[in-house]
Image (cartoon, rainbow, N blue to C red; front, top):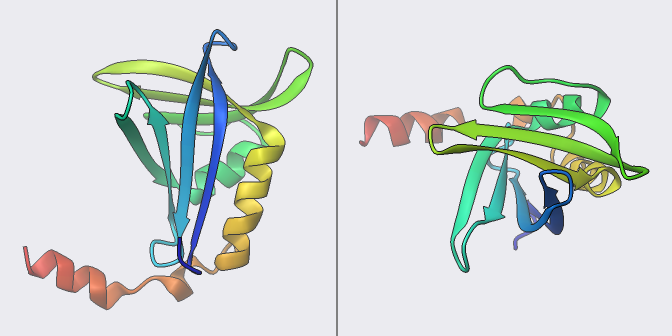
Length: 134
């Protein structure tokens, strides 16, 4: 992990606590608009979801998302959780994450790139070079 990367791991619950799942959350200052959530599927196989950091931040305040990723706060078994619903042609999952752990992760990302200042950290020239060199 470098100084411009934030990484967090936690066990989360799948389908209201029936199945614990390891997750790995990553944020990089050079990709300031997105977070990567990886979930352990089978053994060493990880499934990654990339979505907007703003969606995660807004999901802490209330239900958000209209497409493949939906996020919102809830209470499960007497504890505060953040519910993450993900959907793809391969399936659908509802994951419950510890609310405080997600808040800590978001705070750590904001220490790297302040919320609302993502454009200041985004290298448009590098993106154009990547696109044109394909």
